[in-house]
Length: 194
Image (cartoon, rainbow, N blue to C red; front, side, top):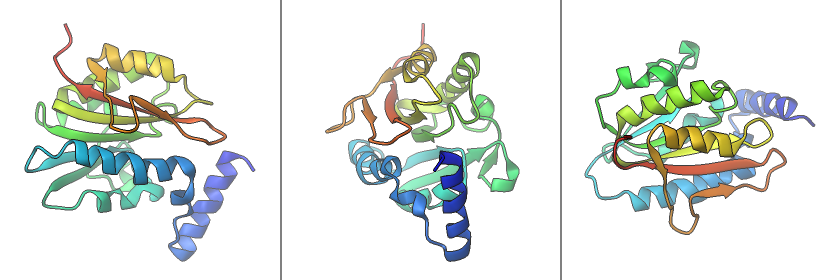
């Protein structure tokens, strides 16, 4: 079964039953059960965390549950207004919608390679994100290695000013055991690029 057909079937089941089969996928299990809890634990120093999920779709609507108010201020962006994000904009323009150094945690899963597809666009997108990220803020980037080169994406993210982030018990990246070789990479804003 191709990935596209599988996603359509999972969406059909969700629309009719409310059951999100997408959450059973190995890459989502790793994100939701391994990465997000560790990330929240590692970044507990602030009284209030500003969290952003980039890209909105039916299979990630529940992410808000992981970041309950008032400890977390959770926002979403997407360029498609029909998906009802908090802010309608392209990732390359997000710095216009958030105060400088505002965000602490950003989830950017399935955006690169599924909308932002070339190196120049990746660099623009992560430069925009760099402006909005707080010093010490962490971004989780998830890409499918069958559609995207993780090495090239990592280079563009570093060029935008981010540094690899070591997530406890995980490392700076994590390959999932999926047919599409989903890769999670972790980056942190430290000092501005020179």
